[in-house]
Image (cartoon, rainbow, N blue to C red):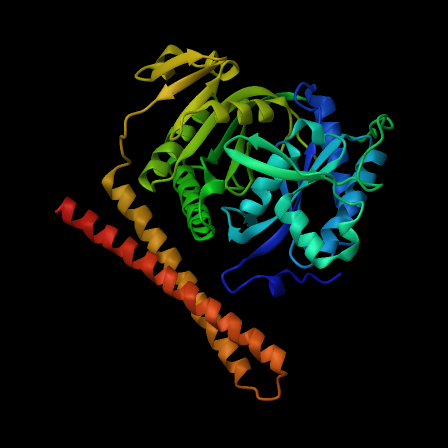
Length: 439
């Protein structure tokens, strides 16, 4: 089916979407080879279920993945039992969270991706333990569904419940209609061919603290800056994606992970420190976790294994703007690698402490110059799209509703240009201030 995503986003690549987050259940203590089988079966089940989706985008997560649908809420409701059915057939236990909210496309260091509170909140619903084997939706999703679809007012959603997940109070309801629950006993896990054997790798996981609490505009700007932070840290290390052999990158919107072959050793820590320093320079609040453990390469995509989950759990223990290191990785560091580090140990991890040391002023200035260049190119692109819309508006044979649609898009793009110009002014002022300090 044709991809209609571009028709659902404003000129800045933003929109409101229906997020379906699927959490793979029971994977935390799996051996690497079984986890690779499990994740591969999950991926195939999700792909099969989404193959007929009219307008959706896949996203991934260490704990599963899902899709963002841009058009109709009934598509999200229709896709959910299809995903549950496909996962059940594959022998994979899942939990599904549904939410409606803001989302946006952005360009990460390797490819286009999506980010937004729609995904983050859906993930928190899927993380509720009692949702395992079924599906639940936020109250916002329920209200939207019942406003659009008469039959959802009967026998689809259960009673209203409330729970605190991380820093968020989530009001949700179970989907109680037939097809929205998996049976108590699943068929055996599908046996799939995995070409590689498990081996040790380093995993560095990171995310932005309190990202869901940011406004939509600040979320988008933070992700743009995060992309620059990653590029600068890679450049500092002399690494280039995807050309540096033995390094894999898996983005996840407001976070992500780097997977490194074990031969990189302490370089994983050095990269984490560079990533942290650049984040500080751009005033981003990153939490970083590093672990060492078993991973399995797949035919497609990044390696998967227990080390990915351990690194993700470890990053959650890091203080904002700092690094946490799992015992598995810490024990491999030599005394010379630990020299000069300020750290404390506890709760199975080593917490590295940092003062607000900065990246060299010349490097920061260069990074800010690149950020200003990125804003200028985005403004130029928006101005080009504005010209196209104004040309279409000048064609008098267009229907009234089409004219109104274009007029709304013109307004949106004009507002986005103004916002980007304001950010550019701030970036240029920071560059001028940096130059004065150097003089």
